[in-house]
Image (cartoon, rainbow over the protein chains, first blue to last red):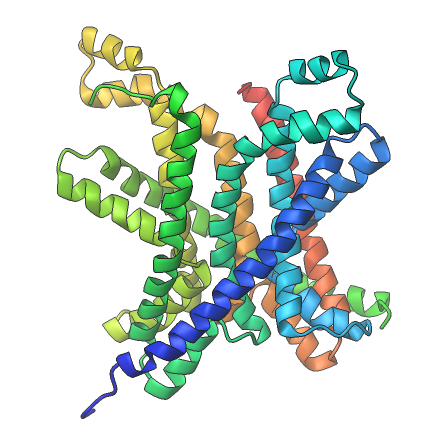
Length: 224
Length: 216
């Protein structure tokens, strides 16, 4: 092997893939966030039927695998006559999967708000809906942020699955680069580093956010 | 497209054979991860700064990159280093390494939750370092983390379809084989989804029960 091609000329290909990865993350993240708020709220509803439906939704989505759900949207929706582009299938598939995890976060945060807040709102003559929107949700929102951030990191990593439904994300681009260079070890290594460069700063940001919210508790210590 | 129940029943034995491989990979991967976590966790409190930084960095790298790409890296990269593992061994190793980074964190959390007084008391009673760990710290640290470990076991089970991408003949591979010959997607993928749902849901119920029994 003389003058073996190095990876540098292929960096733009990988970077274009990384852009698609971020795009899928943003699209599915938005869908997941909106659904998570709705389903998470429904999980604590007073109406048993609503609660039951929301519970079934989260249990089914959390109980099956993200990749299988993605395949479902990609292969089966078209067979049902609903045409989706790979991007739509990806955003929908990952969005739904992660909304189920997000809904659990929303539910836990709502339940975490002190009951006295409900009592106080009632004492002030607020109807339940208003109390929920003005008093409970804003307080629950603070505790949701850090777990949502962690979930976003998981989502970013999970977008690598969309390469399997033909979307040219970072992972797919890696496979393409390998067909041109014939260097799987180095290419996958480079792809890993690029993912790390996207996920790590996000994870660090979440961590500092988390510290901001838990500062009053103080760190747990023990002598070395 | 309708759901062909006859086909669904017909492919069940094939899928169940795949399921056996899936379960084998999950259990083997989980044992790897439990051990891997033990290897990584002490790094957090190592005396040497280098060891601490190295284990911290390794854990961060594993946690902040996708499992799928890690599997590709191992599957296509190891042979270049002259290491020839079977696909199954590579897959189990990949799952194990990925989850060990999470489980190390669980172990660390469990140990950190032990009040400092326990360490002081052990020292006051002249327990040796290993006695302190074996008799005082671990017996208190392990039960509370069992439910968390259970969640990771279920999580790993749900990640195993990725193993299909490195040629391991697990459940999803079996389903793909069916789609390849019949061009029917609804039945195989629905069956796979149902199998996953039944197993992960019943396992989570089992762990919830266990959680109540140990009372944490």
